[in-house]
Picture 1 (cartoon, rainbow, N blue to C red):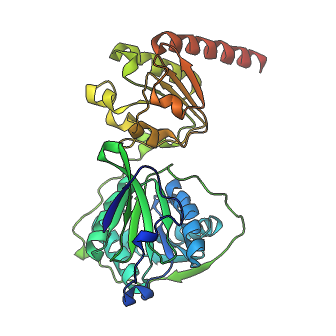
Picture 2 (cartoon, rainbow, N blue to C red; picture 1 turned 90 degrees about the vertical axis):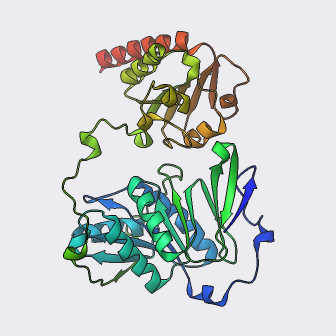
Picture 3 (cartoon, rainbow, N blue to C red; picture 1 turned 60 degrees about the horizontal axis):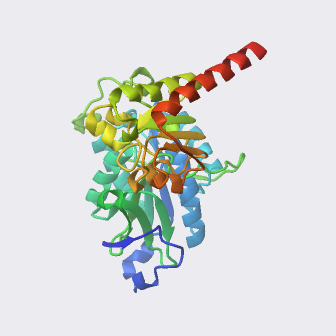
Length: 366
């Protein structure tokens, strides 16, 4: 595996220097796979995002796009397969077994490894969720192949070499990684990094049922209880339509309350930059950026955040970025759609009051 630092994500066709005669046994590896994450009957949205990206890679290679679905309820798996077809999959590999009722690394790794060794995909993509990261590392180790984690861009050469780009050196550089000597080529992508594709209602595909002998008595780990995110205090930043965030420009932890107040008024999630986590102003689950959460809201308001590349990676998918900063040369103004040169400590209360008045008027009018 080779690392090639780049100043920006690679352009298609710009990697001629990586091409070489591929080993003969690589010819057995074909098609692009996406591991569809299903938990308690629900398909994680990152799976659909990956199917959209996988469709592009498969089309460029002229191969099929496959969805891999595992679980214990056949009706749920069939419904998820139908969704996968609508989002671009040509084939759905299904493994249905009672031991797959809950995610367990040992079982999931055994299933995925057996599938890969049997059908030999050229590329395997997984979501960089808690489960996806856990599974990807184990599968890559078991298969003795390369894995690029937290990719932000994916391209493919005519010879099938996957170019996975991710931030490195603390986010100050974008590195494009090739797995030249091993197959399958694996990558994980964080939720909300890739755009959600358009579904094609009524689109269908083939289902391949893969039999696998699994014995519960042979599995060491047991699931005692499942606690849903909706029952915890964990922030759900990646899926919020509106996010308000603060940075060191707020000057104090007390002033960060202004971010929370604005978020409460407009029905938004709130978060912040990495330095605020380091100072203890916010918890790690509310950190936005390369080492935190990637978000893709309709509106993102950044107050007192400089906008270094580590933060930019996490927010550049937002439909509208509004930046508030006293420094007119702050990097965030380079990618913000609307920039306001002002003190966020002064402006945030004014925005909160303005939104409050507008919402009161709307309620009265309604």
